[in-house]
Length: 447
Ligand SMILES: [Zn+2]
Image 1 (cartoon, rainbow, N blue to C red):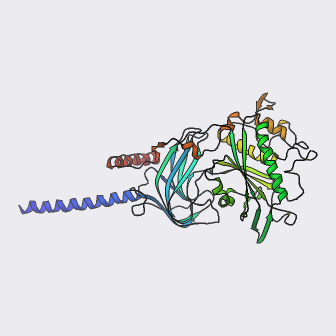
Image 2 (spheres, rainbow, N blue to C red):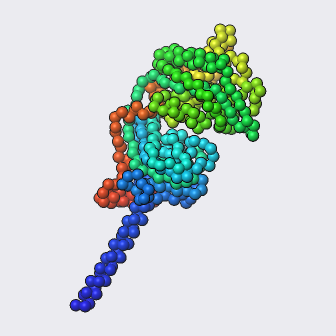
């Protein structure tokens, strides 16, 4: 009898120990379980990735990244997407002491597509829970890697960040050819370059020229494309100066989206623009070479949250006719605007998988820069796919479809198609399923 009792006691103790081990194993699993996300960082084993049960937004543990050193840390998932479809990824985010290594509004806690410039806004400093959204179009892709990130493609960050309630939605692309442009005229530039403070401003003549030229640009888009598109431009004058510039080896100084985000963000919010022009002065007679510009007057091929983004530089010479119509000097002052916008259509065509001639290759196809009208003939044929390819005798240029391939925007998500991609396991059976999937996934990965 005594023997059996002792055995029972032993069994009970064993069972309790086993349960405690199981509990800790489960706890360990839960605080480290990143479901099917893959962890990735620019410096190995610097960041701590954990599931936090104390600081969380909903009943599920939040996903937490902590790093005390500046780096780019993320957890990501490869997601299958349909081609030419808008998507929205959203989550809740909370930050504590998030600091960026360099001054740049694009670095911080964010949602991003790995290997691209597609990202949500970036959160720095200490903030309570707020919503983050990344809207993008899949274009020609079948997969994208969606990352929840501390840092970003623009640079490193450190601090603590919690992500929660991750969701993905599929939208319907608005397929019309009516383009909406936001044109920002920055009236003041006040930057420090090589320890020298440089203050510049635009004149009333500049503003009058630009406003006229923008009106001409609207008409030219329609006429030169032979009604394949329309353009509507809203002009905004911004008094708050540009205080930072970005630098590029090839082009010298220019205005990157991050340099003006603070000044233009609230104006753009909710307006569903397709393209943004930044009009800026970066020199004048007194500051001829203080800001190094490697011979550019317009710069394009950039994007601001998926919208096309270009710089239009006012000439240093106050008497210039670059942006002024004059029947004897310049019949095509909207050329720089059109050229930079066409760079965005060129980029979009390529991203959707079309093969088209490069916008700069006009001479290769027998076109010339002409007095009074510049490259107007080339742009017309480029926009109408009417450039003769001598080799094949085919007509080439922008595909007509490109005029309807506009940036993904909020209004593409009127109907809610939620995708299960980021769904969390809700009960024990789903937890076990997820666990098995993860183990199989890891085994496959190892094999
Ligand atoms: Zn160009």
